[in-house]
Amino acid sequence: MKPIRCYTCGKVLGNKWMVVDRLQREQMPLKQIYEKIGISRYCCKRIILSSVDDSLNNEYIVGDNIKIHRTNPNSNFMKII
Image (cartoon, rainbow, N blue to C red; front, side):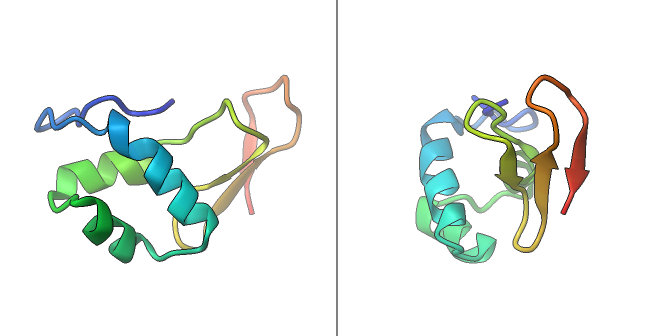
């Protein structure tokens, strides 16, 4: 799910999701992404890092070197690559 707000501080994160997703696909490090979009609080970084958009495709980039792959599109089971 895409985050709308930070669960801890309430900062709006929904408008930053597409930028974060695009920059992660371009292999930009998370530290530079956070600096570029102006995320400085640890709670907001945690929400951005832990959220996965399951509506786009079957492979998701979670961290710098971590990818999650859904083996069956109709299943909720995923494996870490």
